[in-house]
Length: 118
Image (tube, rainbow, N blue to C red):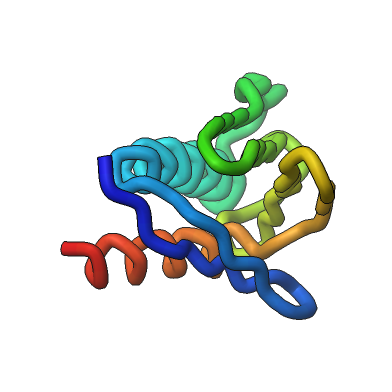
C-alpha cells in the first residue's frame, strides 16, 4: 500500500498529508455519489416537481492511516454540487484541523492526485 501526499485546497489555504491510492479511490467514489445526490435534488427543484423532498443521508467518509481524516456533508442543505461545502477534520496525535472546503474543488484535487499516482 503506497502513499503519496494528497493536497486539498481549502477556502483559504491548503493542507497536504500522506494518503493511499486505495483511500483516494474510496473518497472519490463517495464524493461522486454525493454529487449525484445533489444533482438529482437540484434537477427536481429546477423542473418544478412539487412535494416535500425526500431527505438524503449525509455523506461521512473516514480514513485512518498516518492521520485521521473525516469528511462530512449534509446534502439536504445545499441547492447544488457547486454550492456545497464539505466539513473536513484532519488530525494526528499532535494537531487537529477542522475546516470547510468546496465540494467540487476537493473532487478535482482527488482526481488530480489519482492521475499523478497513476
